[in-house]
Image 1: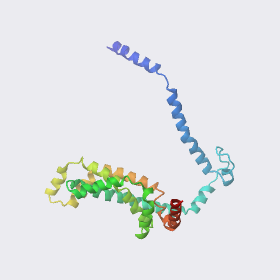
Image 2: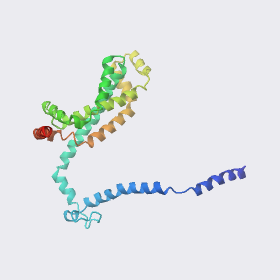
Image 3: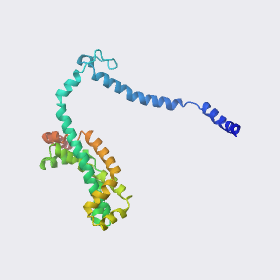
Image 4: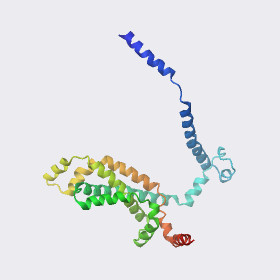
Length: 249
């Protein structure tokens, strides 16, 4: 039996040894890797160069000597501790608010799907996903100023609202896979809707809550356009005049 097994394994080993290297795919992957590694090397090396070395035109040269004056200047120029605190504040509210608001809205829509109001509300939220932020930027700036939301807290609220459509879609699809018997048994024991949601439903949707939190964190932390609503409030007069002149011409 051992001899037979050896005979059966010999061809497979021989075939493995005769497999050819796909040089075309290897070269493509190598080029893709270089397209990422080369800019990364330049970025890191430039970060540790002095001001004179940074403008000498030798992007691929090694810092000599190493300097952190660029980090010091950036820290003082942008007031990094304050900027980091504001960004962290906006991100935390966006993540927590996005998970809570979207999960409660999805629960109401899922449990009342037979009612037209909730069903049409879901369709309305899905329709909002087709409206990109740049299309709504100018009108959103105006509404932000009128509502007094031209501050970090207002930006966090806008993050929650703009992510509501996608988050509700994820939560609603996840809740459809939950057994309704769990909630029904809780109601038979006297649990209210609020208690059933927090004691039964919310712990069960923890995996989707983590997914929504990750998306909300990435969207809020990496966002640049929406925090610049504050800048638009002070420059919207020139923005509107430029658009008007362009339309006339």
